[in-house]
Image (cartoon, rainbow, N blue to C red):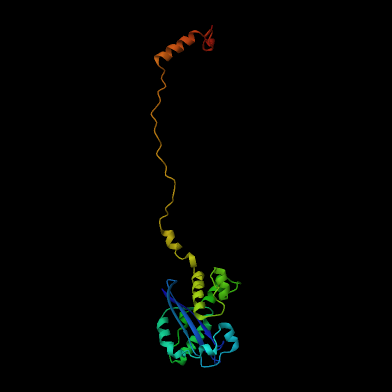
Length: 228
């Protein structure tokens, strides 16, 4: 099954309030294994970058000034997404911006039925715990040392690992393994050695020596019960 894990960076929290998408990163999974195929792009939002947003992702007006608008990369993005399920953390936020930008480009919105929200999954799997991407990376032992600032592609790559862990992670494949025959290693048992039977019958010389010894015994005990 093909799935796409994605993340976005924006100028703020409200598309309807005028904020725009400035970065998107997508990671392809097939049967929950990364294929190495990714889609990554920066976009000029056509508006100033607020300082509080820049503090989160580090994308400045100067950096984005020579980047294309979203409309220039929309077709390549749509092609990469295909009809696969789309996985994001707090997915309603990312879907809101993605569909908002698609609407400005006169493209159909992505159906919400394709949305898989890892935040919802994490809350159901681990109620009461922290569910940020950083916290989940710590929970599952995923290296997040490169995540100094938010970045759409890096966050999508981290989220892909988190998603796999949330859905079974390293346990995937154990069901198949259990169906395989179990080969137990055991020490080989060597066949028992059969020794030739010993002969215990006395020889004629031994019988004669024994009779001579008995003749020397006076009043043997084995005759005591025969008296009278």
